[in-house]
Length: 374
Image (cartoon, rainbow, N blue to C red):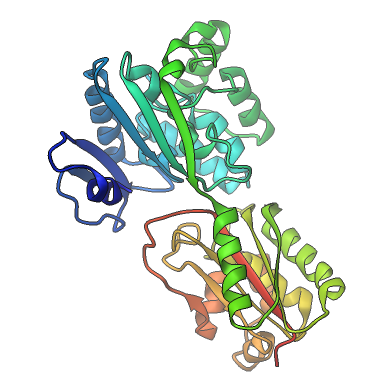
């Protein structure tokens, strides 16, 4: 996004900025500085970058324009904790929520009240400057308040809501976080800015890319190659295994004409036990789908569009009509591996991981099932 801004910005016009992205996801820029940091758990580099951004934005005046380039992952990449909360505590709570299978909405409801740029705080820091947020959506529904925890968008949630999410998922809350949220709950003036805050009268938020566009492009690709395609939804959410079984149950009703490509997007979750294997939500979905279909004439792919499935280096995996047969030959037990959330190990052994490297964009997950293949 920064490189695109540079490419289209007049050379004679002033331009400077700071961008933070995930490790190994940067690309060369000339006028905008790029910093790499950790995702999905924040680190000190992201914290330092966020504090520098706040300092730069606070120096803008009424004749300046702040362009915010926002995409999924910003919640952890710009994780400068609020006063009284440590980075270690923020990492602890974030990890606990992710392991508990919390949705991105639940995670961000907590994080936006614990970090200095989230929940409209970046817009508030810009003071009298005009603002334009260009947003690539990685969340179901494309709500700007949820993408990267909405740094330039009014926050509909409160510190009370954050505490409720922590109670809902039975998270052990560190003392610093509990004290901050309870103090904020008692005095809402310390909370994130409300929709009527003056800063939002000068701020525009625009969605420039989303999952729907990517799924429609995939459907066109299939159709250009003579295969009818349907997009069932770009808003699929829920437990990855449950979603896989739902997709499998849907296919018989769609099996005419053949072949047929069935495409879906959205973002599933995985609830981890204390002892588990490796894998992300897309390989988990695919392994559960293989077991649900039981060698039916269906091939499938499930990947995260950013090229990273959870915290793994693969984007996802592919499933073929003989996946379970090949697994049996290798003496893999798919039911046992799914039970211990070792989908990465399963597809790695088969050589069926999808490795794209960093795509430098993120419009959520991509799943395609091709029915009627030999």
